[in-house]
Amino acid sequence: MTNRDYRIGVIPGDGTGPEVVVEGLKVLKTVTKIFGIDFQFKTFDIGGETYKKDGTLLADEVVEQLQSMDAIFLGAIGHPDVKPGILEREILLKLRFALDLYINLRPVVLLPGVATPLREKGPEDIDFVVVRENSEGMYAGGGGFFKKGTPDEVALQESVNTRKGVERCVRYAYEYCRKRNRKKRLTLCAKTNVLVYESDLWYRVFEELHEAYPDVTINYQHVDALCMWMIKNPEEFDVIVTNNLFGDIITDIGAIIQGGMGIAAGGNINPEGNAMFEPIGGSAPKYTGLGKINPLAAIAAVQMMLEYLEEDEPAQAVLAAMKKVVKEDMKSLSAGRMGYSTSEVGDLVAEAVSK
Ligand code: IPM
Ligand code: MN
Image (cartoon, rainbow, N blue to C red; front, top):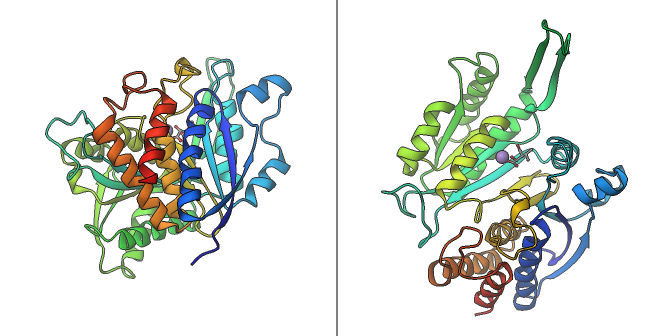
């Protein structure tokens, strides 16, 4: 058995972040009682409000403290009064980069009883995982302006792809695909017909590493076609590996086909370091403080965190509880239409975990 005493950094953040984090923690505390795990929580006050108050974004000592945690649980970052990009880049992306959380793991799973916009598809069809590179690509921020604000202005935005960065991501995807042990099918999503440098590197690494994973079947798709197939034939997918920007885009399609932002969660992981788990829906300012937001995505983030900590039994218990609640209790996964308030949904899941 692993060391069952964990230090969890908690970043409630902005908008509905704090409300859903409370529910995630409620479920985690129930798990603590039942399975005898010890969690110590340390809350970090970062986000739009602190930025507005004193200009603080993400101080180096906060990064250091977060680094020492066993895992991090994040609510949401983003504030309607702050110009788009500042909080995202200086807090969320900075955390991903500073802690070198180079994998963004995003499961796309339709639970029984959840409505999907794909009319002919059910839970047996929608069950795959996107491994998104999370530390470079278009997100590295390369580029610049030339003659900004003049009629001759030039804007360059560069994608950074290192052999090391691509290799560690693709290797993780192969390992994950093997460990998941389902269809054992790994799809590379890129754009080799246009991005002749970037995608070429990804393709070569993908093929080279395949030699070590003969038990995994490989498949390649251009990103545009893959967007179409995710909707037309989602059952074709098992694990998809892709770069940072493509991963960002395709996982929004993933989120909507699994029932929406009310349930979609992801993990920012450094397999050799630590990890940060989050609902991927953002701060949803218009629902802030109303008790209408769906906390299931945050609870799903907690579930992923338990898996990451190799607490498999509690992770299974949380998943089973979520399945029960979406199937038997909730009317919808959409904010304001759940048939319950945010905290009531948290109570239902916590109660189901205890049974
Ligand atoms: C996500 C988000 C972020 C991203 C934004 C908020 C910077 O969309 O986690 O998918 O683009 O990675
Ligand atoms: Mn996104």
